[in-house]
Length: 152
Image (tube, rainbow, N blue to C red; front, side, top):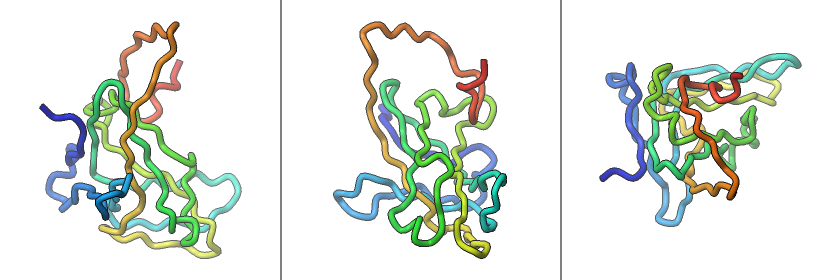
């Protein structure tokens, strides 16, 4: 029985996407690569973050989630995650909108554009458990993909 892991998202099967790996035995995060060449423009007030596709989806237990986190070297290179961390719920996997394909959102705080090449490590994924309160009675079901839980 599968517990947690990564798969290639639909539409990315023939794009030479690599399944994330941990670099060392005690590393918490799985290194994730960019799925295609991208340019992250130098930041200007009011601009939206650049979404970098990974070509991946991840699965985990119902009482788990996974975090998209910047690499420790990211800020030194000008990469700042737009949302500090990404929180991906277990029910994002395989959703009807985008199959659970996750992206990293970055701003570039350098004074020049940054080129990201396919295969560059752009971030990391860390799997985590979560707890609920005694009074919790959530019973909603995800019906969409990216940003769908904040729709009313």
